[in-house]
Length: 189
Length: 277
Image (cartoon, rainbow over all chains, first blue to last red):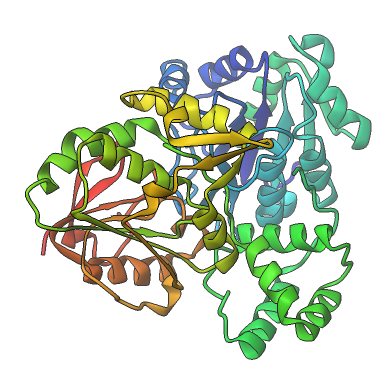
């Protein structure tokens, strides 16, 4: 049975840019679920990332302001040097607190707070990456009733991150990039 | 320090905790942003190996010293010198020239934390040729961080990032001119604090204590909810001279504020506002 999915959370690091770009390229204009993305990035470079993703995407891609309301069909990218949290009011909260897993933004923080706010109505996807950030976040999301997805390790440029997630959580789906795209498209149809 | 909370604190428990703190210490957390407050509480419980909210409440009830430590750990104090170098360049190139002719320039760092931004401002002003005609107020809710700011002693490992920021700010020399290195710490030049007054101040109490030409409050209000944010925006507006400047974090916004029409956004990228009335 398909759950009522209200938000999609994506975490990625080394090797995830192409995957994310391909996903955004394939999702249709009328895709009506918000996508919240925490991708590791250089702390001091504020410009360029969101613009590069926007070139590929049919959906608007934004680096949200603190307190921005989460809307259907918008892609939210964690801004440089901020953690991106999801508030219970389904708004974005930003934080400059300590790095987690040597990362700011940290995928664990985005996943944990999104799971708190959306419970069983969220899907979390961990993509290619060279560290363990996101593993605990995906576990937390799964424990709160969400759907846990990882990119198939063989499909990843760097498979450390999805493997770390798989090591501590029962994964619902292991998907290649194309399967992720099909899966997401079906969520709105 | 990488602290991953293991315990999950629910919203009911959070409310119980903030009710207790308001009753016992007259401090109101009810308008803090919930997700980050929840996370900070779980982090404190992890640090002190506390398993339940009741254990935390018991400790808070028993010791004022513990409450002070708790307050320090709840508030986020991570900061950098010259964080967002492009903002500091904009201040140097666009804002300081506008202030140059004033007899005395008054600047307020609201939520000054451990002081990195105060030293950045002092260095900026010094390099721009401002001498005695500047008065800086640095306030924070937390007396511990104010002591750190006064001492100006920072782990040397932090200086690499600060140096990189300073270099992107395109300062006239090197940050090394402003500190000496000893025993693994950088000791900032105390002369930089000549025009600085420190003060404990809680933004939530809405106390106006002076009129300013520039208020810096970056990445402080993100920990408040919209209601408290709006109250603090009003406090700042009351604390600004006409046409004075106000700076928030690059990913903060005043668009939801009830008094946004009293400000003009003069630099969108760096979030520099000017008070209209």
